[in-house]
Length: 353
Image (cartoon, rainbow, N blue to C red; front, side):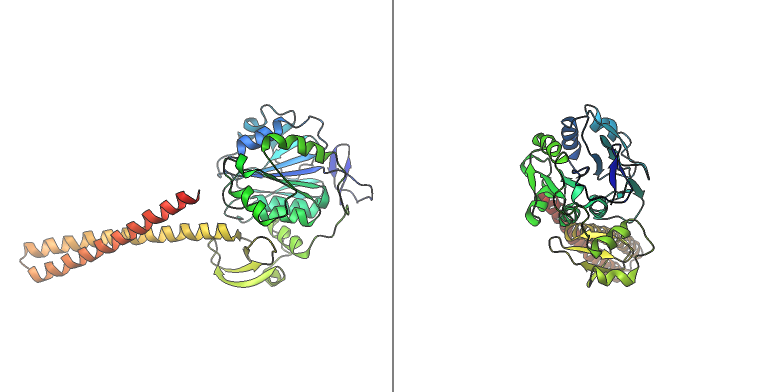
């Protein structure tokens, strides 16, 4: 494992001296920008740790984030760069459409498959940080929808790191912190206004436990998946999970249910990954898309049937006209059923969020 040299988490052989929590990884989604801005505003300029941040970003967004969240910070806040070193006092933010990962001494940007429907996603950053730095990692989960980050936070915990979650009452969107609290043994749950004091204290404390823990084989495999490593293929999927009856909504391949004590998760051999909640959301969007296609087809069928009926009546073909009138009415009734289903689905979705 790496050691710290001149305020840089350099890729050098491990030593037995105990170091502090010098790598802080932060994940946020909806409502996360004001939360991370508040956190960074309270951190000291001499913070003895590097900070990496993942927001759920649209592919064309993100360039303005460093200025938005770092305007009043005493730390340097910039976008992440592939293979850039990890340095104390620097905050690096994931760029759009790339996962932000950690290797000993450096950050990586990889355009791997989406996880939990996002790229960048929180779980790959958290897992890779746990793999590279073990108990030296502080994982922070802020406001957001669904549950990206819970599996990664557990990876940090399982390697001896510290798990910090924003108090759901304090979050603009409470899904992500609330899910973590419900499923994991979180170390600290605090409002974001108190988080900078906590993080500063943790960064200056020696990392507890073994400085060089042995991560699980599953964590190694999943980290290599995010890195797009050629070492991981379909033959290794049975080492991290069992084949499920479900298919991947992204590539339509088989999904494996991942062996995880806390978070129900699924992976396909092409490396797409889903929590149960994100898989359900993806399936819901697939179903809604199929319903809209069916609605369009029925409306077109009804219109065509009426055209045939009108033309038949003009030619005094009353029997044919009645047949096509009935077909149009049947298509209208079926279309109304689908409209009702779509209205109900959209209402249920708004109720969840």
